[in-house]
Structure formats: C-alpha cells, structure tokens
Length: 268
Image (cartoon, rainbow, N blue to C red; front, side, top):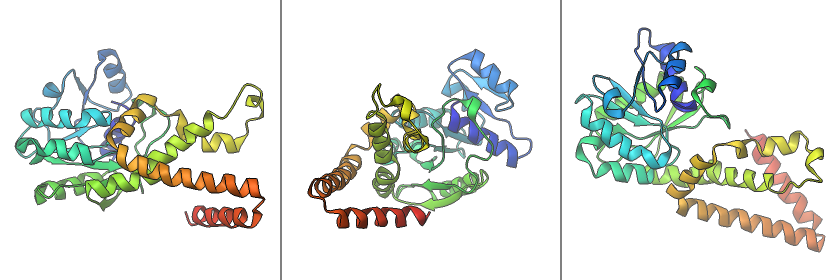
C-alpha cells in the first residue's frame, strides 16, 4: 500500500460505487490508518489471504518482487480473476510470469506513467492517473479476455491506454524515465556546502525526481540494465559534445544544441 497502490484504490473507489478494496499490508497499524483515511476497506497480512474471492489483483510492489507476487496471487485467486501491476519495467516480469501457466493466464502487465517523488499511501490521490498514459504490455500468450479486462479496468482510473511489447516498453522508458532519474540524481550530487545556499527553482525542478525512493530505483536499474546502459551512452555522448564545444568556444554548435532541446521541451 504505497503511493501507486493507494492511488489505484482511490481511483477505482471514485468510479466504481460499492467496490470493496482489500489492502495487503506489512504493518497492521498502518493498515488501520489506510482504512480510517478511506483508501481501503479491509486489510490482509499476506497475498494469499488478500487475493481470495476478488475480481482484480493489483500488484504494487517494487519491480523485483512483482513476478513472484503475481504467481502467489494466481495460486489462490478465482479462475476468472484479473491480475495486473504498476511496475515501471516489464520485460523480466513478463518473462518470469510466463514460466507459470496459471499465472500467465491471469496476468496483464501494466505501467501507469504517473507518480511522485513522494512515497506512501498517505500521498495517494484519486486523480493521479487521470489523463496519464497507462501502458499495457501483454505477451503473445496473454488471453484476449484478460487484455480486454485490463483495458477496461485501467480506463476506470482515468488513464489513456497504450499497448506495447515488454521489450519496447523497457527501451522507451529507459530514455524518458529511468535515465532522466539517474541524470537528476547526478545533478543533485554536484552541489557542495559552499553552493547549497544558492539553490534556486531551476535546481529544485531538475532534481525533483532524485528525491524518489533509492531502493525502488535500484530495483528498476537492476531490471532494465541493458536499455539503461544504452541510453546512458547516448547521454554521455551529448555531455562529451558539450564539453568539446565549451573548451573550443564553438558557441554556434552550443546554441544550436540548446535551441533543439528547447524545441523538444516546448512541444510538450
């Protein structure tokens, strides 16, 4: 029950009257708080306890735990249950689930491209996914019925559905999410004691995502090493170009590069 899991619960509660939401929690005290805040209706202390007699299971764990959680949920859930997730890497998750026939028959991998540097269900909102892209990454073995159910479910959160292969998803997300996070962290590490009191809105803007959970981002890097390494090479090439232009006073190239970057950013 973190930011994304809590926001899925709030989103579905907003659009599906009478829904009963069970939260799998590690701490009973926190679970009671989520009930008091109206995020969930009841708590379960294990996946096995929480996933019986439900229509949909949403796995909102760190990415390195998703596949095992899906398989555990599949073992105890109803035959027609939909299992989906919120992980920001997909290839290794889908491959691992495919090795279990029961789980792969129920699972549709998903990635809502929404979030915050904040963590915890106390920051969950009902509109987090409204208008945001939600990527579904079915395998070739994913039953059409499950894919249709996943499409219907995620649309109820207010998201816009895009379908990609797990491999294409990871390649694209390395460039628009994973490497930008690492770049943000690198910029944050440039600061020193003498410059700290000069921080302005620009530094805060570019380093915002560096405040994300380090353990979660380590797991993302571990799950998507190849695509991240390729995109880091592109980034390193750009930095080397910048260094060369600065050293050689090639201001025309530097200005052209800055204009190209501005055009790209302005298009959004």
